[in-house]
Amino acid sequence: MSNCKLSFVCSQQWTELKKGDDSSVRYCESCETDVFAVYDSTEFELHRAQGHCVAMFLGGDLCTMGMPDVALGGEGFELDPILFRPISEFDELPLRMLSAMHGHGLSRIGDIVCLTEMRVLELLQSSHSDLSLLKDVLAGRGLTLGMQLDGWAR
Image (cartoon, rainbow, N blue to C red; front, side):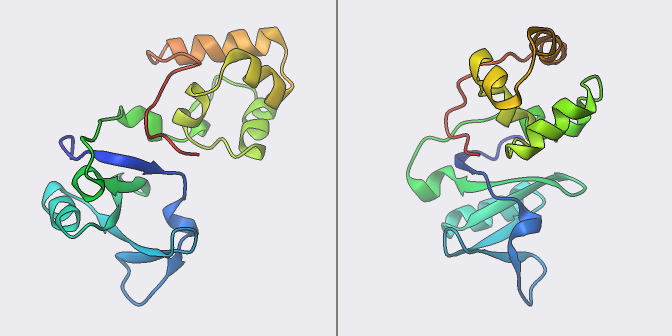
């Protein structure tokens, strides 16, 4: 699904959406709309043509949700799949830091890289050594703090 583009990336989680009779459709109470699970490019194109919000499953339960580019009339963009990975994959970070991130609703790697260094220090009440460790972990994955991710929503 590397050619599937979203104009808007949603901060909601599939598991938190209201279940219905069809296991491939859930209801988002925030947007008051159905969200359709897609597992391949063909399904994505079908729902894009109909203007549906989609949950793109990238393997297992890992997914990202949003609005396909044509549905909003935008040009769309591609985000690196690593941004949608859970922060729990940062096993190099202390558990207290990961817990603090979760406590502030930071659950995906993309949520972290959007923050500035000052915001990380504020939110997580971290030391400069914790900040340095986080920056090293991100750098090891080709990422930095303060990244501009157009369309990223928490």
